[in-house]
Image 1 (tube, rainbow, N blue to C red):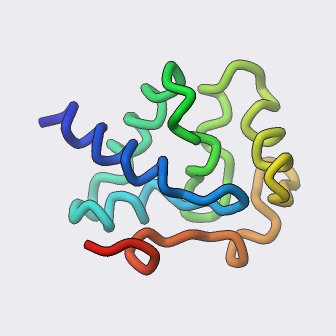
Image 2 (cartoon, rainbow, N blue to C red):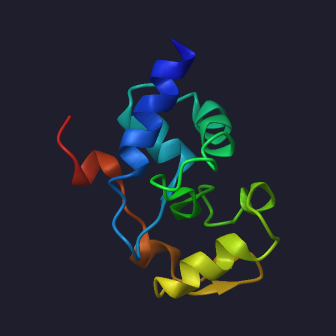
Length: 109
């Protein structure tokens, strides 16, 4: 089951448009498992071997780059976001509400 859940997480993450971000919790809610944001985080930590998964677009509910330590290089996550036009200050997305992408609103169930 865990691998199926991870696959479902990756399927959602691949749909996040460039210049947008979502949260672990938003993905969990979309998948119908609102209490499994932490498991979404584990999935993201395991995703870095697959370049088709834009893991840099998944942050915590406050816009913090909590997953940055799992990238190659301390600044990689921030740099990838900035390349997409996302403002980051002190490991937090500055314009979080404007760039937040909620799969519940954007995708069909």
